[in-house]
Length: 91
Image (cartoon, rainbow, N blue to C red; front, side):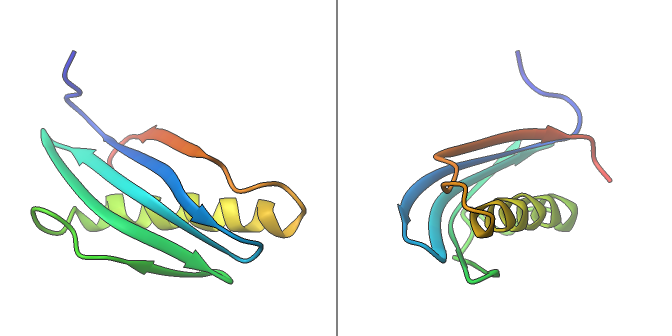
């Protein structure tokens, strides 16, 4: 069933070490899907080029929040999550 409201963030871990993780990101909202490589390195998030264009700002802010949360957990000794799949209502 197609998602009609809100947005979805999907992250799949590609590479990681103690302070850095690289993810393949897929963001979906309003029937459109956006893909890019994203990295969090010592808390700093770097987004690659989004295809087919940039996702909505509210969805990118959710992506950043999920990555910061994973980084904070990593600082407490947890492993980097292999997958992050989250849906949220549009803000």
